[in-house]
Image 1 (cartoon, rainbow, N blue to C red):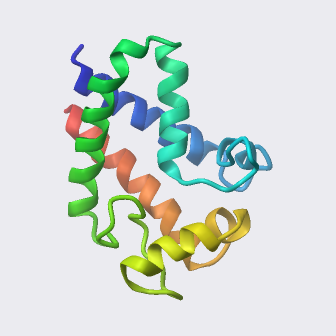
Image 2: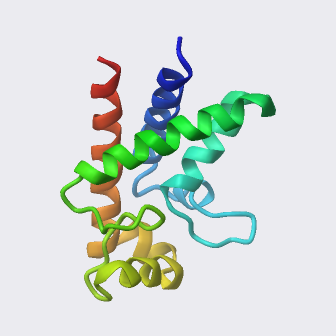
Length: 138
């Protein structure tokens, strides 16, 4: 199996794990970092990659390049894309590229993952990313 296909499968697995925890208390542990800050899907994908690779550091650069390319291609075709690779989920309250970063940085767990437009778009993003990756494997 190619590194690209493994990368696609890891992204799909990260999406599935996250979607499975929607609305459950266990979600918070998955989407927070060691400083107890809420994080986005890239953090979840990286955690999933790390578990999958089990410390095989030499594979990281190639896999990271593929994951970057996969996510970048998805973002560009996603109908809600903010225009920012780092903060792809748009923010209605703040608007624009700066608004996406501001929402990500300023939002807590509830706003990012539980309720409101920003959380709803995050879940839509995850569903669409999973579907995109599945289609890439066909």
